[in-house]
Amino acid sequence: MSQEILIWDRAASSLAPARFHEDVTADQLAEAESQWKPFRQAAAQRLLSSGSTPQDVFRLIQHLHWDWLRKAQPLREGLLSVRCFGIEAEDRWQGLVMVELAAHSAELEPDRGKPLAYVEFLESAPWNLAEMSDAPRFGLIGKRLMEAVIRQSIEEGFGGRVGLLALPQAEPFYQDCHMAHPDGLAKLGMNWYELTGKNAGEFLGERQ
Image (spheres, one colour):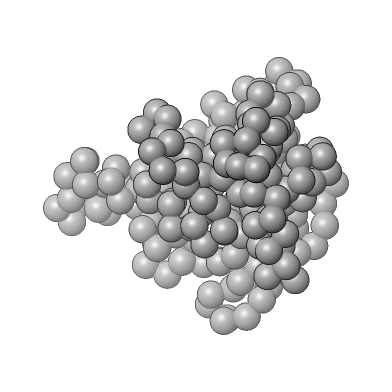
């Protein structure tokens, strides 16, 4: 199932139509990876050719190693607790998010211990990112995907609560989404970010 949404067309400096897909399949993830991988590789090669070291490249593009073809395994296995949403425009995938709806709980009071929607992975297409393109194409992709995650959290009865482990590069984005980072809470070398039900309502209110 899909519906029309609006994203930001940077070239035209205006809103543009896109398709939001609420049940992205494993095959569609593979399609997105086939579109994104060559662009990622080309961006990394340009940086290396300009004198950047491999370490510099991975600091600048911290999700360079991501592979949505591998990430599709839970969908192939039919896990009902995993959902994947996507945004499509100009016949290309512009953004994806994978959400786990079980086995994760809030860390912040007053909701500590209550279930939340956990963002496993969220990515905008590489041509939309300043670190990979001299002329990033579309904006608002991440925000639209976060809206979808919040609404799914509400639908599941989680009150809009969302949690995730953020790559350092992505932390400013999640802060802009009203997510909080509990002091000292980190796992796997990444900081934990959480959206409370109250802040979820504020975030959605801004997007109207």
